[in-house]
Amino acid sequence: MFTVHKVLVVASEESATNSIKNSLEKYNFEIETSTNSVEALQIAKSKQFNLVITDTQISEGNSLDFFTELKKNNYTPQVMLLTTSGDKSLVKTAASLGVNQFLLKPITEDKLLEKIRESLTIEEEELVAKKDNPLQVLVNTIEDSVLLVEIYGCSQESPAEVIIGQIEKEFIGHPKVGVISLVIENKFAMSSEPIKILDEIAEGILNRTKFPQEKTLIEGSFLKVFPKMELENTKSLRNCKLVFPKK
Image (tube, rainbow, N blue to C red):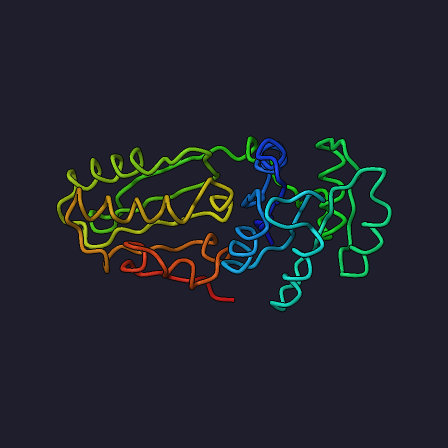
């Protein structure tokens, strides 16, 4: 089963969070970053992360206080601490607080991925490279009544406007269309902000074609990747018919 792993990266320097984010965004990871402990706790409460990576140095607090607050909220993701050779006492205390992975700086991408795979028990073949799964969009009409939009792979930039344009062109040529069906493969979840992209597409279909959103179907293996609540907590996507795959 394809999985998008949610990772929160916390460090006092934005350059440090961005470096880790850039390394991980090449693969099937969804990344959030923060440079201070207060904001990081708010982000952590907003969604269920699989892994939290934090430096020993955090603005508006320190890593040990951050771990303690996470535990107070009954929040137990895997936690990785970025350390230096002089952090032996801190490492011992962090381990007692439930930190289960340590990575010595300076960090290399290979070592970072190795440690993450250990933390999340990810097999090498389960690490999916985005460059090997480029976005593909097929738009066709079936028997003049169903406009079928098939979306494969992923995109780092929002393809919403291009996809909306393809749908609009096909829709104008087939006035008898009674259903628009977006069938989305699970690897689309690796795109940058995939739910936001789909919400933009749903809104664009309504604005450009005036087609009723309740007759727009969103289906496919993509819907297995995200919790139903995230999909329904949107502006336009929630008004479409979400057809979840049977378990």
